[in-house]
Image (cartoon, rainbow, N blue to C red; front, top):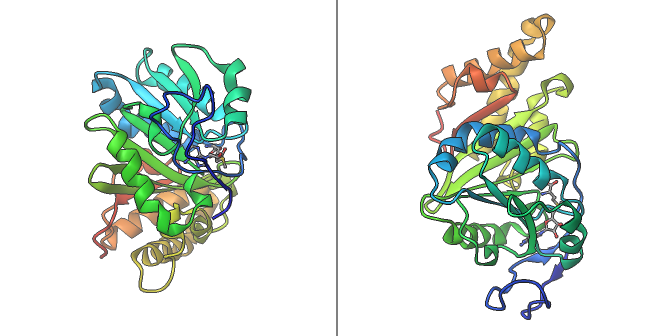
Length: 276
Ligand SMILES: C[S@@+](CC[C@H](N)C(=O)[O-])C[C@H]1O[C@@H](n2cnc3c(N)ncnc32)[C@H](O)[C@@H]1O
């Protein structure tokens, strides 16, 4: 694992002493708009749960060297889901917590030190993006368990990975029972072939992209369908993607949500998936 194991003693000012931040400090790479795809999907797919939540509290776990994606998440949720949403950016690196304070806008947006235990908060939703990627695959299940145990009843965790500019992404929707769905998403205007999505799978799947594994079969099916849909290329990559996703669904993959979401360059399906 990359990074520095966090000491059992919380740093002064790091929050209630009983909450030892669980995890390690890792690279803080981030970028404005990097998480736009997953945020839009969260608005659409988790919006209802957030609207129904008694306390509309959202945690952005591991926001990185700059709080920009937490600021964006708060703005998107407030505009599209409910104006009283509160976002808490949690970071395990106290230097990054201090650096984020000028961007705080309490109570709507605050920043604090915390790890997978979520610093004693009980959020309705957690977005943890590009955090587990730098951990060992064997640590993933425990990190999921720790985060989902801290959620409010019915709470949701969105955990995934993307490239530096957010053009390729993969994420899982997870609740207290484990993963529910997998989403792959790409900026279609820069996508050469869906096989590229394999580079940005969530940590739990990235090492499973080998023959015989469902994720390998799925990416292969999508890639084959994309190539078979080459005749749609003159109509633009969106039409080609829509055609490819329809073909994957027709082959028996239980693709969810329909063309209204697919047109964003997305594909979501139950995960673990009943393979065709
Ligand atoms: C690559 S940055 C991701 C920034 C942002 N989420 C994004 O996707 O652009 C990963 C950040 O996660 C933080 N991190 C790693 N493990 C963590 C944990 N267990 N709890 C909180 N933050 C953590 C690291 O310190 C680092 O700043």
